[in-house]
Length: 104
Image (tube, rainbow, N blue to C red):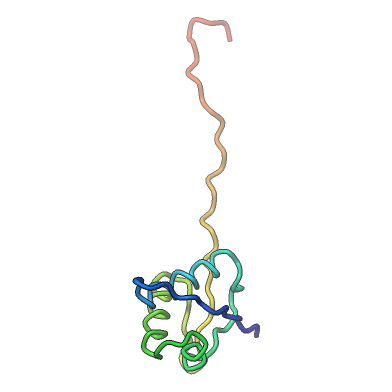
């Protein structure tokens, strides 16, 4: 099982820490920086890495789970879940009205 490597976050003043964590991790997941199915480090380790309280990490993980970007497995941990893109509609040729008076 691949383990996700979380880059340090440089926090900006005036923006809630939880929001910054969610935005940074969401961007990393959506851009492929955190591979689908990779296991996140434990909450305690994330807390130390980001220099924030455990409750802040738990809140951020809850928000990521609500966005469908992280799944939790009881007793196992948290995993990256990058949803597959929605299927693209088939290209339909443009239909032009036929002139009923023109020879076909």
